Amino acid sequence: MKIEKILFPTKFRELAFNSLESLLVLKKVGLKEVVLYYVIPREDVGFVPYGGYLKEEEERLREEARIRFEDWQSALSKQGIKSKIIVEVGDPVPNILAVAEKEQVNLIVVGRKKRKGPELSFVGSHTLQLIARSKFPTLVSKYMVQFEYNGEKVTRVNDDIFKRPLLASDWSEPSARALDLLKSLNGIIEKAFVCHIIGVKISKGLDKSELYRIEKESKERLEDYCTRLKSEGIVAEPHLGAGRTPLEIIRISREIEASMIIMGTTGKDRLHEIFMGSTSHRVAEMSELPTLLVP
Image: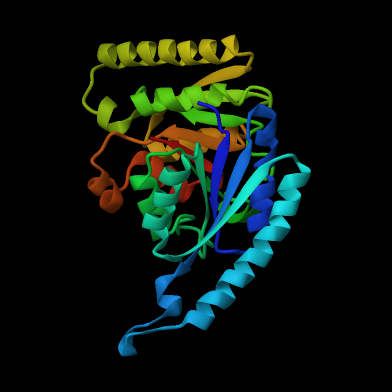
């Protein structure tokens, strides 16, 4: 599973270009093309009460997007990466998914929203819908974030995201696909980490012998994942945690100084995921690190 073609939807928020630049290292492992995409919200050009349409406003927004994108294209071209500009009127989530399907991309990259409090999410409702419905690996990019850690406000810049990735596995098929994607990044990884969490729901009510069996089995699986990474020339280290899964993944990511978190999305019903969320979605919401979700 190589990343050869990226879909990069943007609202031209602050640091969006910096986020794009942080992905260009993927050229070393096969990146060939970036699709630069802007959705003009339908409500920005629709004049619903009178049944009209603001054609001049649409043309202005299209022209602004084109000028900005052409500047970005220059930076991509200097790196030897092809690019394409697409600007459409519509609804962000269905439009992005339709373009991803049409262009057959290997990765969708979405930005984070501005976090306004220590307990609030880095991920907006559109992004949650997108990652719940996407058939493509989706990276929630968080180039610069502010968050509370040990009672202090911390600012973090995520500009070398593939250096120390943490793969959080639940042994599912999506986790196996996430491992394959991680293996394809050999050449830009300094060190990889693999973790598994024995969750509260699993451990609750078990006697010591059964818990020991699960622990032993989990360690063996972690070693197997690390062996597979090492066979691809990637230095890998296993970590086993226990407790509330999203919080444990975030705790481990901080202790090992990970640069990003990679997870398979769960096998839950898609509609359930949109409304109730999943472990991978909660990690994307809560962690200050870029989060790559693999369906």
